[in-house]
Amino acid sequence: MVTDDGLSEEEVAFRDSVRSFVARRIAPNATRWDLEERYPRELFQEAAALGWLGVGFPEEVGGSGGGATLFALLCAELTRGSAAIALGLYVHTALAASAILHLGTPEQQRRWLPDALAGRRIGCWGYAEAGAGADISRVATRARRDGEHYVLDGAKLYITNSPFADFMVIVAQTTPGRGLKGMSLFVVDRATAGVRVSAPFKKLGMGASEMAEIVFDGARVPAENRLGAEDFGFIEALKVLSLGRVASAAQGVGLGQAAIDEALRYCGNRMQGDAPITQHQFVRFTLADMVTRIEAAWRLTLRAARLIDAGSDYDCAASMAKLFATEACTHVCERALHLCGAQGHMRESAAQRFYRDCKVFEIGEGTSEIQRETIFRHLAR
Ligand SMILES: Cc1cc2nc3c(=O)[nH]c(=O)nc-3n(C[C@H](O)[C@H](O)[C@H](O)COP(=O)(O)OP(=O)(O)OC[C@H]3O[C@@H](n4cnc5c(N)ncnc54)[C@H](O)[C@@H]3O)c2cc1C
Image 1: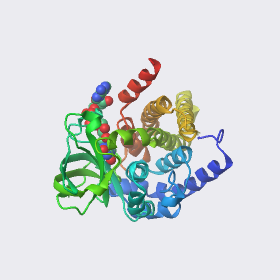
Image 2: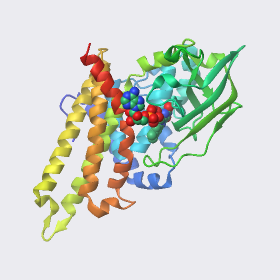
Image 3: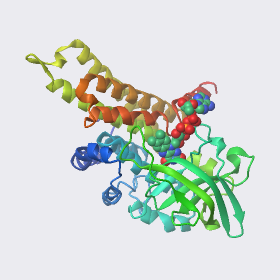
Image 4: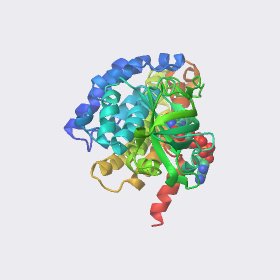
């Protein structure tokens, strides 16, 4: 129930076109893809053909224009069909390709973006490590300059898309001991000697999204593959990769909406005697609360997206949207599973998939605690 209030005609038309593709191509296959634990790679090219990989990218580099609001609508609708599918597309565009757009030179953009936005070469984003998670200053992967190359040593953990990615955008330490002010970004070709990707991990949720560890063992990366200034690439990326928290909030809205759809369907069809279980006030009130939370989450998300598009300060608004929408999503997915009873617990049911998928939104793109710290920082200013 994302209402049309506040959206332009163009935005409504865009949202409806994504919604109809998702209903036809993604939602009917989502359970099967989840159980198979394999990402349908062809979706990258299908999304590219529809112009969706290029949302937020200028036409000169193969993009289709648009900004944060269109991207939020895209994320919400894709996630309504499958959170795992949306996650793979999101990491490729909003993290890997976006880092190249914002930090790359025109030559670097020409080298990598047209293939990425056409879905011919897929990217992943390698920040997290065994010792670097919520605290972003702990990256230990080392990039040591050696003539015209950097030599990378270290390991990146939990990297979405890495089992099949063609290129990797990697955060590595170029000057040890300087925390965030000593970290750079590199585009690493998968075929580089000394780069090894583990077997895909088994996860609680996001079954169709593939994730693995990437190990760098003396991998020689050309110096021309560094994005942004040496020592400042990561800190710059944190400033310019503005879509992350808003996209995460939108994903929470989309998944929450999918859970509501499923609970409404089940409760409307589940008969006790002659009447559906919506005869019970508990069921009606639970559904009413669920939809109210997701509507509020969408409002915060839209507000943050609008601020980004207007070039205004969005930092606090993005954290509020991310915090509220992802926690609302977890709550709503739990309630949906409850309302769907035993049928909801079956492996083939959508309700249990939503329940397994939702939690990650509270963890990625800055955990809820990190968002609360950001919001408090603004309060205390
Ligand atoms: C499905 C999935 C996909 C992912 N994909 C990617 C990817 O593509 N690329 C990538 O780089 N990473 C990826 N990650 C990893 C993600 O970046 C990390 O999970 C995230 O940064 C959090 O780090 P952590 O899991 O190590 O949590 P930890 O840092 O171990 O934190 C554990 C808990 O402690 C709390 N905590 C930690 N520090 C503080 C603090 N200062 N104040 C208050 N509370 C705190 C956290 O909020 C959290 O609840 C993915 C993770 C998942 C689950």
